[in-house]
Amino acid sequence: MQVVNSVLDLIGRTPMVKVNHLDTGLCHLYLKLENMNPGGSIKDRIGMSMIDEAEKAGHIKPGDTLVEGTAGNTGIGLALVAAQKGYKLILVIPDKMSKEKIFNLKAMGAEIVLTRSDVAKGHPQYYQDLAATIAEQTPGAYFINQFANPNNPKAHYQTTAPEIFEQLDGDVDAIVFGVGSSGTVTGLSQYVKEHHPETELILADPVGSILAEYINEGNLSEDSGSWKVEGIGEDFLPSISDFSHVTKAYAISDAESFAAGRELLCKEGILGGSSTGTLIQSALNYCQEATEPKNVVVFVCDTGNKYLSKMYNDYWMMDNGYIQTEQHGDLRDLISRPYQSNDTIVMRPSENLATVYQRMKLYDVSQMPVMDGDVIVGIIDESDVLMKVFENADAFDDTVESAMTSNLEFLSIDTPLEKLMPIFDDGKVAIVKDNNQFLGLITRIDLLNYLRRVDVNQ
Image (cartoon, rainbow, N blue to C red):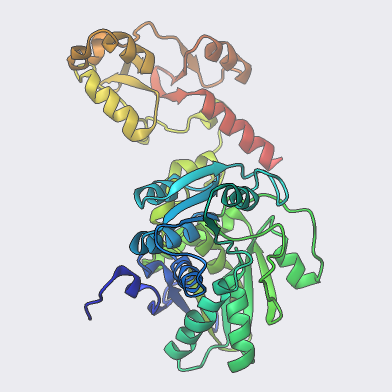
């Protein structure tokens, strides 16, 4: 254990750990823990490389403004280096990225520009195109452009690839990776071709990306889909990409990715992000198909700390249909937070309105049932609290009972779905009971989630 002079000295030289509890067939599977970089991802490597090389070339100097379009992790790597070296940083980020990444970047001093995630390259709101425009319109700004920057793959050629072979004494049969900007695949391809041509490179790709089809069938489609996994998958081939040594690709669904990431945490104790789940499932597929023992390396691309509100949140997983729950064929299927399973966030009549406010903020809810024992006696929502405290802030000390709505209407579990709309039109939530037993609330978003699940499963 040594003392280093800067956090930047901690980038790279990440550890490797052997998988012990997942089904790897005849193979030995090793995890390259890129989540152990100080910024929490493999992108720290390219953040340092692209800034260092731009300095050496005389393109930038401390005090300048850097601009980049990123799915989040490259931005964190750049923010880490920019803060240490004295650069301003503007990042353009698609709006599907996790809020943890955005909070992280803002806390590191980056200026964040959110843009649309439903448009393709060539559209002015596509994150890379918008970043290029901002760089062009900002006096003295330098566009990092990770998708065309040769110092992106250079980082992996000079550091990532050599580390892998050194750690396993050169005995590496296959490496499983994902592609975002294509720096990893290009650096690995160039290094492997020169030094270890017998090593296979295996692509892990989200369903919806065009890359798996390109590798497996040689067809470069112009029709990409959408996916929720962050940081990997593409709808075009980056100009720096080199897939010449990639032998096979696996297309992994969002559901498979999230499940594999959660299983990695549960069985191996490794908290990886959503793209790590895609890579893990691909690596397991490869290992289970192998007919002889092999040493296989897969990246844990980033830390799962950035996805706690998504793939590690049971409610988000259920709302998006990634965790299947028991279906009853009635209104119970719409209750996302059942009271009987202790999932409902509740208030008690004697608690104060300050606690209501705090609980709403903490759990991101706008209304809660008021329970006296197991009996629902009221509903309290944002409007109830606001009406009490708007002209008298001291009213935050008043009780829930003084502000709640106690004139309640209940629905039975067999109430037709269409009966919900008039309730929502009145600004209310549906309160569901079965034989006088409170089951839970149904809100507008619960109905939307239910309709979306039905649509996806049809």
